[in-house]
Length: 480
Image 1 (cartoon, helix red, strand yellow):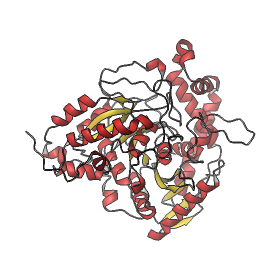
Image 2 (tube, helix red, strand yellow; image 1 turned 180 degrees about the horizontal axis):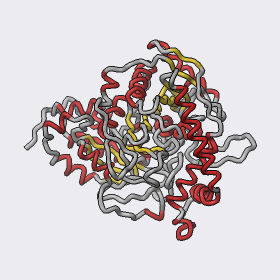
Image 3 (spheres, rainbow, N blue to C red; image 1 turned 60 degrees about the vertical axis):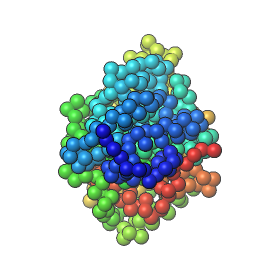
Image 4 (tube, rainbow, N blue to C red; image 1 turned 45 degrees about the horizontal axis):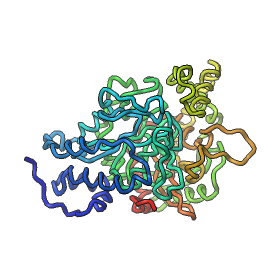
């Protein structure tokens, strides 16, 4: 029978306040057990999630049984990058997790029970993770986490505010201290926007870095899986657990020889950073712009040169909209005829946009993406990073389906997300790091984008910035 030392951390809340890195360290040294953490998470979820509604789908009994029976790892497992040693985690409700439905936030799939866990979840379990619950999501896609199955997820910083999306439940669960790590996915900002809005860290890795078990189109590079945590070190740890090759994902690549946690242990400062408040594409809240520029300029404290360098993002706004609509039409157009009344209006609009646009529209969008990639490549000949706000405005009321700028223009439900979605087009690794709050206490994140495949460099710079701005300590927090 496995035995553990007396835990130096006594209460559930004290355990929940540990970073994932700290918790895994205590698990490896056997100072705490997986069951200690599962019980602590259950206790906090039952007390706190009545307000937040981050984890509506739970499998507490199975998590406790798994924790009780958690086997002693082989030496190879224990030494492998990303070994999580029995750490409880949350799984986004776009992934299949055995024993729970995969609803995707849609009434159409409210009772859809998968045959078992998908390969993303299985890979994390092989790395010692214990899935304890599934996190709430918008219906299929979007950046405000509400749906007609489970209702809205509320922000632990202020329950009247949105958590963003689509990985909103995951971000809220981290910010509220319900779990230590959570899965996310990103099409137009779904890892980065909720991270910014909840004061945590979300990383969109390089395309193919994390093998996908499902894909709207397996050859499409817009959707990636990625890690979410309360600090950059935790995100690096989780990316080591997630990085893998899977032949079912034709874009996936093998895990790197150098672990991502090495970027935290031996960080290297960037030499030159370009900062832009708006990518030359749209409007940004003045306070958000000021906070982000101030944070980017603090990279000079570690020797970086920071100026206003930025690639040309001309025409990328519409190009992403076209490619996203094309993707959603291919993925969900079969639901229009059979289930139109059960689809939310935003998804109907996006599918129909994809069906109604022509081949010339898609061809032009592909040309714009190619030209952008070449301009980004030229930019990174001179710069190490591009920095910009994660979101153009701070968290808005959760009761608003999406923000509508008062500029007299017609707007779609994703227009305001442009700072994340045009970076998606590059395929480059991007991370959102919390850098402070507005005067009224709403979290703000800064995006750092690196060269193609430069995930280590992005994590390294993000870790150094995190140490400078020192706001990671503000989570977890219990909502009032």
